[in-house]
Image (cartoon, rainbow, N blue to C red; front, side, top):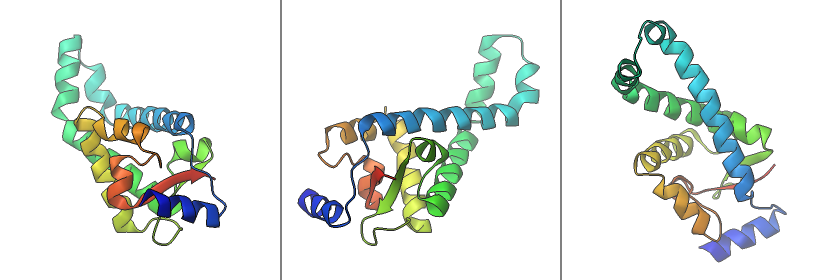
Length: 149
C-alpha cells in the first residue's frame, strides 16, 4: 500500500507534509478549539473559584467538547481539505481514491477516529510518526494523506 501511495504522490507531483508542519497545525487547531470552547462555557467557568470546581465543570462537558472537535474537523476537511491550522501551515488533506478534497463521510470518519486516537493516549498519532507515509490512524481509516499545499 505504501508503494502505491508513493507512486501516486510522484505522479501527482506532491510532497508529504513534514512532521513539523503537521505538529504545528495540530497546536494551532487545539488553540482555536480551546478558545471556542472557553467562550462557550465562559459564564459558568468564571463563576467558579477553585481549580477543582473548574476541572469538574470541564469534565462535565467533555462529550460536548469531543463533539465540537468532530464538527470542526469534519467541516473544514470537507470544505477546504484542511483545518485552519493546516491552512496556516500550508498543508492539505487528500483522499487517496480521488486525490481531491475528502468527501463528507471520509471527513467524518477521519474526525471521529482522530478523537478516539486522542482518547487512547495519542497512540494513533505516534503511529503516524513511525509510518513511512506519515499516516496516522485517522488517515489510514479514512484513506487520506497529508501533503504540502
